[in-house]
Image (cartoon, rainbow over all chains, first blue to last red):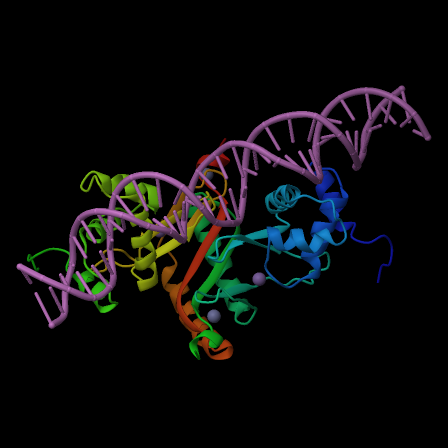
Amino acid sequence: MGRGRRDLWWQGRLRGCGYRVTAGREIILDALTKTDKHLSAEDIYLAVRKACPGIGLATIYRTLEILVEMGLVFKFDFGDGRARYELVEGPNKEVAHHHHLVCTNCKRVIDYTDFIEDEIELLAKTEKGLSKKYNFDIKNHVIQFYGICGNCSTK
Amino acid sequence: MGRGRRDLWWQGRLRGCGYRVTAGREIILDALTKTDKHLSAEDIYLAVRKACPGIGLATIYRTLEILVEMGLVFKFDFGDGRARYELVEGPNKEVAHHHHLVCTNCKRVIDYTDFIEDEIELLAKTEKGLSKKYNFDIKNHVIQFYGICGNCSTK
DNA sequence: TCCCTTATTGATAATGGTTTTCATTATCAA
DNA sequence: TTGATAATGAAAACCATTATCAATAAGGGA
Ligand SMILES: [Mn+2]
Ligand SMILES: [Mn+2]
Ligand SMILES: [Zn+2]
Ligand SMILES: [Zn+2]
């Protein structure tokens, strides 16, 4: 396992898109890599402040916008009034592709990877058909199930 | 085909949930029934003003919140900074269940019903499995494909 | 290594969709 | 018809996100 200077994998992608490599961008990407939660911009802001106290919230938003545009990060709306961000894929694919169960009552979000194989297969077929019929270049997809989680239904 | 007083189908549901039947609610539901577009609160406000000039924007928001909670209306986020609303199902199912293609460039939204049969079948299976495993009562789902539409890619 | 161009940043104000407040009005059961 | 109370409109408040702008830092070239 490589032990060299860490987290170089995304630097090339940033530079390739004409962006500069900065401490803020490194630490934000770091925060997203280290968690399995669905962080809001403010969550990231607070987490990142420890290692980089001077950072501004605007930088968080600007960086996230870039990362989403580059396809490194997903931006989600789970219905709680703020956007949530999640790494698409880690350097060695530690983050698996998955879909979401969203509780409309407590806003809890459950990642699931069960049944993903069948879904992926169907999605591939559907994407191909839709791309052709609607002349639409599909980049990614969102599948979310909404309902009431176990915690909320027992009350 | 019945010809009696129109649009009574939702009145029972409103009352059943403890809500009163009002002119505003009727006309808002009417606007949603009459269109195949994905209306924002302001779109509805402007459309409804013609028939009900005194109505306030706050009433639109309050009514939509109720309709979403009752399951008569879907609330979507297509990434253009405002929520979009769409009738779940008309009185006689004029509105078919469908999914969406969303252009991340121009924000255009395409409804599609192709491939829906396979999707529905898979979703039913997936929902059953997820409900049991995660003790989650699934009420509905969202499937959206993101990408670049034909208009945007030719430029 | 130093310079220079310019992308990036932090602080702050502005924006704008949505929610809240509150006094007035309308619904509907009795 | 009446009374309890839900619903409404106008306006202000809220608050996540974006824009502004002067200061700073990245990095290609000398
Ligand atoms: Mn997730
Ligand atoms: Mn639609
Ligand atoms: Zn819950
Ligand atoms: Zn487009």
